[in-house]
Image 1 (tube, helix red, strand yellow):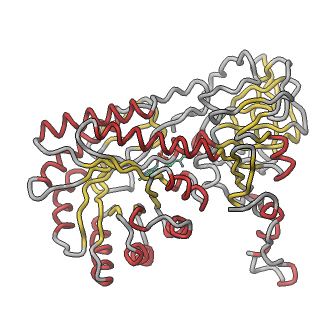
Image 2: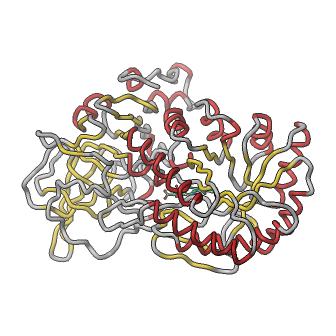
Length: 478
Ligand code: LLP
C-alpha cells in the first residue's frame, strides 16, 4: 500500500490548524469561529445534527472530480484519434446518490458484486452503461447481469467464459464481454513491478490472452470488446499503466489480425493525497502519459488505436470525504525523548479499516476550533478492543486538544464506508452529503437496534424491528 506509516516520525507542521488544499476537500475552509466548513456546512453543526462518527461527503467535489476525470481521459484519447469510456468504480463508495452524481457527470458505473449491481440498478443507472467485474461471480449474479442487459461483463477466468456464454445463450442474448488479463505489472504509488506472471488471483495470464480471446469469439452468445487489466491502486504516475498497456497491446494486435478489437480497458488505480507528502501527478498528465504510450505501441504493432476505457474510483470520491469524530480520552506516552498522545475517538477500525489493514496514512485536524498551542505528536485511535485499532498512526494536533473536541480526518471518501464493519457491535455511521450550505443523509447510520434485529438467537421480544432510524429522519434523505 502506498501511504504506509513510517517508523520515522515526520516533523511537526508549522501550523497544526492548516487545511492543505491537496488533502482536504476542495473549498474546505475555517469559518470565523475556527470551525472546518465543508460544502458550506460547518463541522460543529454537522456533529450536533447527526452525531459522530460521521462520514461527510462534499457532493460538488465528487461531481467536479468525476467530470474532470472523464474529460481528462476523453481529451487524451482524442489527441491520439480515439475516444475514452470512463466508469466510476463503485467499490470505492456506492450509494444511490453517488450513482446519480457520477451518471450526471457522464460516467458509467463499474460494479463487482450482485449487491453493487443491485444498488446501481436501483439508483437508475442505465444497465447498458454498467460494467460488471469480479473473479468469482455466482451463476445467479451472471444471470441477473445478462437478464437486465448489462453493457459489459469482465470475464476473469476460463471458467467464466463458459458460464457467461451459457447464461447469455439461455437468455437468448449476445453479451458484450472483456477478458481480464494479468499483465504482470503491479503498481503502487511511484513504483511498478513488472514480472512474467503476477502472483495473485485476478485475470488470465497474458500468454493465454490470444487463445482465450479466440475462445470468446467462438461463442455466438458473446461479443468480444477487448482486453482488460487493473494493475493496482493508489498509483501516482503513468509509467505502470504505460508498461501494462504496451504488454497488452501485443496480444491486442494478435487478436486484431483476426477481427477488429474495438477497445482496451486499463482499469483504475489513480492515486490521491492522504497527507501533504503525497504528490500524485494530475489526472490530465497521467491520461496524456498513457495515451502517448498507447499511440506509440499501436503504431509499432500496426493496429488502429482502440477506444480506451478506465475505471477510476478513489480519485473521484476519496478527496471529497472527511470523517468527524469526538475525542473521548487522551493518554500521553513517552517515546524516545518525546511524547506521543493517544487521542481516542468514538469510532475506529469499524469506520476506517484502512490504517489497520494497509498501514495507510491520514491527516487529522481539530474541526471545532483553531488553537495557537504548539503541535503535539498524536496517534488517533478508536474505541475497539484491539491495540491495532488506529485511525491516524502519526499526526499532529494542537497541544491543548481535549476530550469533547471534534476532530476531522481528511480524504476518507473512498474505501472507508465500503470497508466499514460492526466489530465489537459498533453501529456503522451515516453518510451525509453537503452542498451549498445544505446537508442531507445519503446513507442512514445503523443503530444498536439494527444489530439486535439480526440476531436470531435473541428472544423475539428482545429483538426490535429494524428502526426507521433517528439519523434518517434528520435532514432529507435522497
Ligand atoms: N477496476 C478494478 C478492476 C479494480 O479492481 C479496482 C479496485 C478499481 C477499478 C478502482 O481502483 P481505484 O481507482 O479506486 O484505485 N480497498 C483498497 C483498494 C482496493 C482496490 C481494489 N480494486 C484501499 O482501501 O486502498
